[in-house]
Length: 414
Ligand SMILES: O=c1[nH]cc([C@@H]2O[C@H](COP(=O)(O)O)[C@@H](O)[C@H]2O)c(=O)[nH]1
Image (tube, rainbow, N blue to C red; front, top):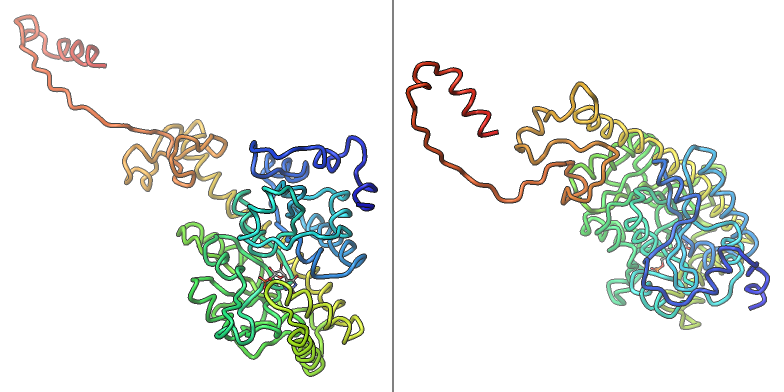
């Protein structure tokens, strides 16, 4: 409450939240920065907030969150940190809101199952990977950056403790940049589960090694590899063109200079897992508990690695968002040329004409409201049709001047 009082400033956006009652008007709000970016067609990168509230201690969580946002801005994209503030799903947080969230107590870790109750009870919620993917889908933000995704927990074959992140990845068309999954999880089964969900997992960089968060290798390889941001953006573009509607994981290894010694981190994780077991920690409490225990056991070294990898992921994610936007702009300008330019105005391309005249390309700036599917690009809607048979009897005057008579008939028909 003390934090609340401190940050509830008169006239501020946060103050507005705390004055607001439950509203059924809009399921989400954008920050001013994100709203502008959307209207100007700038690339946007979604960011989760569980990493702020449950993944790192204060003040490192706040400093890192701000630095990550600035890295994204410096590389030409706009950051959109997602959280639920007093029940309002908020896409893009002001500095004031970030500051509040980084210190607030009792913020609920918000995965898919938690979103509606948090909104209904007007609580504060920090979105996990799953929760953030849902927001990114709602707001049409194709790229999302985080540190690590959830996965199949060790002994998951008995406990069925499998993060909802994996199912969400399976049913979204979001590209998630992360550093793989931690070895507190069962990495092999996590990859198997992602395969079952149809998620496209790509290692990023020189090798196909699937990273294990604190370390560059997990002993498993990713089924695909992308060498750079442009290649990753092409995979996203192709996936959307094919309307696959299943997610993409781009797994970026922690920069070598910040990678941890495999033996040291493994020992710290094993001890933390035993401690969690002794303390009866389960479900959504496991990951935050292990993170804190490992940071303590490594005297903060694991936290430094965590901060370094998320900053590096922000660079990669911003570059992918920028490259993807360029690919999208090429698509849009092709569409605009087909119908928007004076030369090609109103003409179907040979490609679109195959779909008859209902599929003429829509101008890039036109509303997709009546196109049915906003990706189909049609701007002519045909509902039903009619065949009209008319019989004309030729009179004498027509027989004497057939071409003049036909002109008259055509004019009547038009
Ligand atoms: O290194 C991390 N891994 C995972 C998380 C968080 O934990 C969530 C997964 O939790 P669960 O296993 O309860 O689904 C992820 O979505 C993410 O928000 C984190 O903060 N740091």
